[in-house]
Length: 257
Ligand code: SAH
Image (tube, rainbow, N blue to C red):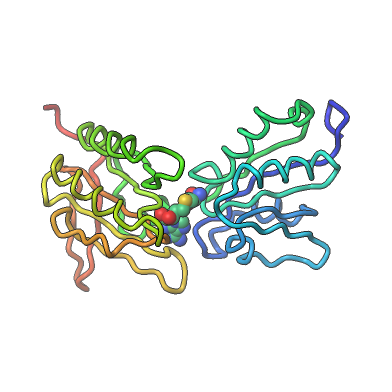
């Protein structure tokens, strides 16, 4: 029971980019302790779930509704794990849970709510190619489902101007096909063509595909909904490896200009 006398617990859990070995022991323990799992169907499908656990799978578009449902379950005394891929706080379910708490039943503020961090796609993707996030960076979602596309373009231009490496989440989907092409157009006007670009698709899964190219050569068709696109800065370096692949790193410091 929490201080306010309503039972149940809710834990928001990031389960990493796909590989079992990238689910942290803390996330595993939180999942093992849950009576109910709530989340996007494909993420839940990745988990081995005991027969006594109730699974509430939903599609990807109903985050707030899903968060309210989870809070209602917790308030009724269940131990609920809300599951996100990667880290739940990075374009995941954690914000939806807090938005629902802020707007919802005041009793929800008395619930025992916690967040367990996970390995976000940007960390898993960066590790595959070396150290592209070695200096200042930002993460931008290219999805315009929850914000106007103009805001995306403004942020891309600002990040390019400020010298941030960019991790671009949600670069494309069947319903959002043109955004990544437009993104490259905007960035080509703001950055040198040699800036390294990485397409990291399905990192840590069986069909992983990681490609290193340049901003001038970057082909929007390389991105799909399971791809993290990373755009370097003018300082980001590419090292050719003996086997034809490349390392990419961003030096830890930049010279005074
Ligand atoms: N909370 C997640 C992000 C959810 S948004 C996290 O922290 O990683 C969904 C986007 O994440 C996808 O469109 C893709 O850009 C990225 N993504 C998630 N898993 C990925 C993986 N295994 N490989 C590459 N990108 C991934």
